[in-house]
Amino acid sequence: MAIEHTLSIIKPDATRRNMTARINAKFEEAGLRIVAQKRVQLTRAQAEAFYSAHQARPFFGGLVQFMTSGPVVVQVLAGENAIAKNRDIMGATDPKKAAPGTIRAEFAEDIEANSVHGSDSPEAAAQEIAFFFAGTEIVG
Ligand code: RTP
Ligand code: MG
Figure 1 (cartoon, rainbow, N blue to C red):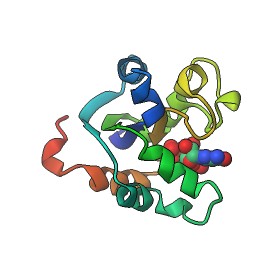
Figure 2: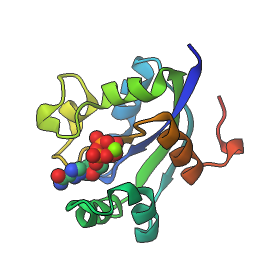
Figure 3: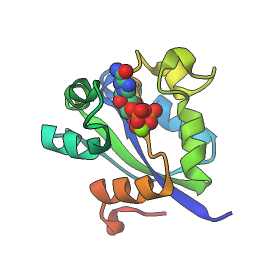
Figure 4: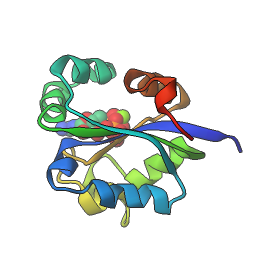
């Protein structure tokens, strides 16, 4: 199978609690490679644009508030079947429903402060990677 790329974000609840390395270890142990990574403070406009697909959802305002509440680590993960593999490693959106051993089961605080984001399709991955990274910043 071809190598895929996916966009991952370590969210403010996790950076605040110093969990970046433990989350990265989960990716690397599963065989995903971190081929780009940077720590950024999202502006409100950036968070609104990134999550624009959720604009009409009742949780949108809270999500934007949360995603701008502290630094995030944006990263590109590469590997075979990387998009689905990363979603498996993350676990369900609600940590109460996440399978044991997943990032959200182990680290998330609640359904909103759930530690990580991962692209959910090849189209989303391409769009979300381009949102944060120039091609020259991705080093495989
Ligand atoms: P993500 O996009 O961050 O990878 O998470 P996901 O696909 O598992 O969940 P999604 O439905 O796309 O929701 C995006 C993010 O919005 C927050 N959320 N809050 N309060 C709520 O009921 C609620 N529902 C979702 C979470 O931070 C979720 O990851
Ligand atoms: Mg999503």
